[in-house]
Each structure stands twice: as C-alpha cells, then as structure tokens.
Image (tube, rainbow, N blue to C red):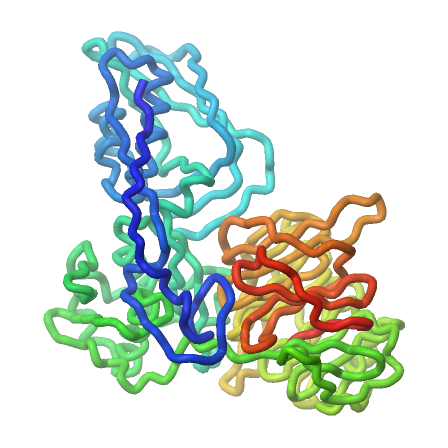
Length: 575
C-alpha cells in the first residue's frame, strides 16, 4: 500500500505584503506608515511543504489503490498536474477525469471500505468492486475556485468503482474534482483576489478565489476574463470580455517577469476597457501590488502600459476606533485615548458608530440618534424606527439593522435610505452587518433560514458612491449560528463572534478570508458584547468590548496578547 511521503522543499521567501503599507492585501496587521516594499508576485507564503507521492505498488489491494489516489491528489493540485494520481486510474478514467473541476475539503482521517459491485464487470476486467470513502466534509470549491462551507456536518460517502485487469486493481469510475484534507488545503490552493471595479468606478473590490498553486496565474487571468459572481452582481462593473481569451494556455514567469498573451479580441476593446483590463491583471497577479515586471500583449501588440494613467489602487483607508466613555466620544487612534467630543446622556447606549464625520448612537430605547463630529445630537435617524444594531460604512455612512431583522437603513450627509435584502428568506433575520474597507461588500449575520450563519453580498453604489441597493444574491461564508457581532479586519479577513449564551456556553469567535475556511479566533476572558477594527497606535488592530465596559485590542497574528485600550466604556464603534 502506497503512502504519501512529505518532503519539506520550502520556499523560504519573505511573505508578500508582510511589511507593506495598508494598500496591500495582507491577511494580518497593517502598518500605516513607513516605506513601501514590493516583492515578486510569486512570493505569498513564507513556507510551503511539497508532497512527493508514490505510484501504486504491485498487487495493491483496492483500499490501498484508493488511499494511494488520495495521497497523490494534493500533489496534482500543487505541482505535478495529477501525473502520479492518474497512475491509480484505469486508462479510460484517466482520459476523462478532470481534477480541476471541483474540490471537496474534509477534516479528520478518511475511512476506506470495500463492498460488492452489483453491476457486471466491464469487458476485459477480471472482476469489479466498489470502495467507499467516508469523510467529514467542511467545504467545497467550485470550478471557479469559489469556497462554500458545508452546513451538514454529517460524514459523506464517496464511491469509487475499481476493476482488476492483468492482476492489478485500478479505479475505473469516479467523479470529477479532488478530495483534499484541511491540512493540505492552504498548501495546495492559493488565495487569489480577482480585482473587480466597483459600480461607482471609484474602488477596486477583491473577489477571493482559491486556485491551484501549480497554475494559479493562468486560472486567475481566465477568471478576470470571465463573468462576475452572482453575489457581486450590480456591485461591480461587468466588462463583457467574451471576445478576449488567453492566446496560450499558460502565464509564464521568467526572470521575475510575468507574461500574459491574449488574443486579438484585446485590440477591439475601447481604450478605457483595455486600460481597466490590464490594471486588473496587474493587481490580481501582484496580490494588490503593481511593483513588478508585467508584459501584456494582444495578438502580438504590446499593451503593457495601457493602464499607466489608471489611479485605482488597493489602498485601504485609515480608519479609527472610537468609544463612548462617560458621556464623551473618545478616539483610540494613539497609545493614549483622546477625547474628540462630548455626547452626554448616552451612558446606557447599546450601539455606537463614529468617524471623523460624526456618526450615531443606539439609545437604550432602540432608536438611533445622529451625532455630529463633536458629539452633539443632530436628530433622530431613520424616522425613529427601532434598530437592533449599528455599524459605520464608507465615507461617514451609518448602517443600521431594523428591529425585525428584515431591512437595513443607511444614513449619509443628511440623507437616509431603506434597503431590502433580496435574497433573505422568510425564516431568516439579520442580527448585525459590517461594511468592507473599500465599501462594496457587506457581511451579514443571519439567524434562522437557509442562510443562517454569515453571508456576504455586494453593495451597489452610484457615481457619487451613494448606496442604491444590494446584489440580488448572497454567498454563504460561515454556518456558525448565533453570530451577534462581526467586523472586516482588513480587505480580506472577516472576524465574527457568537453572542453570550444564557446557558453558560462559552462564546466562540472565528476569522477567515472571505469566502474561505474559518480559523478559531482567541478572545480575551470575559463576555464580549461588541467588536470593531481600525488603526490604534499606527497599526490595524482588532478591538473588543466586554460587559464590564473594558476595551481590549490585539494585532499581529491576532493570537497575541490582548492589551487594555480603554475602560468604563458604554459602547464601541469604528469608522
């Protein structure tokens, strides 16, 4: 029986974006000052472990053949293009099987069991049987690299038909796609942000995919040329690039120079569309950075400088973290809390959203009251409608969830609007929302219904960046129930936590690139009632408020030590 042999061929390169400005799509903390450093786009992880699988041994038993195939699939995604994996397949199955068609991600250890095949063995086969593999599925990838978590936690059985020819067992029938363990997932799949242009034309929106390491650039360019995912429909611009395709089935890198060769359809595009396309390719293949050598051609014509005048970047705005403390609005942007305004009478506030432009406070009676930049009241918001939670959005926006959890409200520059959530089913109720750093994605915590957990959807904006609606579809990113608070830590990572339970169940929190697999997030001791993220002492930090009125913050790996940022706080908010 073959076994996978792991060889630690590690690429000991500095992680891309580890020390760059907040402009970079870094998964973790982001400084807001210092020199910009750009690295080659091939360097995203500090260390990758390559698998070195072995082919089938003579006289291997059916279970061993299937297990060997499982051992070989990660290397197929990562490096060898399924060369070894196909050795476990019969010739007809090898010719038809597409490993890149989809992926099933599982946790734990698979169980392999054989059973009889009631169908007649095919001509030329000495015998036939079925091996069933039981796995605990946690998520799936579709053919475009979009991740979906699994709601059903029961084990799934995957069936493989085997035939025996010339004394050797081989797999003759199987579904397209691969089956990958959670331990292998981030070693063989690479997170890639396919940069889309927002509907306002003023922001770039990271559309996260998980693509195979061995040819991720080729796949990424194909996805740029493809259509917009349904959950971003209307929130990003559709370029209609069906006449443009890759001229060769690869995007080679030679001497740190990336070459993208496109067909003559590139020539037929308008100057604006060509400029936008080249810019999207540049930032997608550079993980949000443009400081590398990229050559883009169309039918042999060099368009590498087509985006020279493009101003769109992946810069993340510097946002502050604020608390409502003893009738004062306090900024936590430095090591010492700074009072920026007075807001007396809100000691029992249950929600707070604030920025340099002002904000709102959620009073104890469930009504949102407007606050000016110095903390003065500027009237009741949303017509006095009862609100269950508040958050801040782009350019001083205040977002609110209605008491019934069915509608949202947005306030900006003296104007309020009411939004419906087109894809929310009758049994689902929204508990809280949070707006992404660029302002074109909305994270939604839902209680009940088919989308219970956390979902993301697109925010549709006009040319003035005013909100006009939400996309007609959502994308499930978590199936964790009872989520009561959430925040985008940066442009890629979402952090969310469950509410306090009356039965004493401990709160749980998670962080994840969205959409992507979730990782447990450590919380400080105590009951957490609110969370926010923003710049504290020049670094992007996660801040949480507990039920004793203490704000703590953490940065870096987000598993570091929590430090007290403020005490005796009524409510916590972020820009």
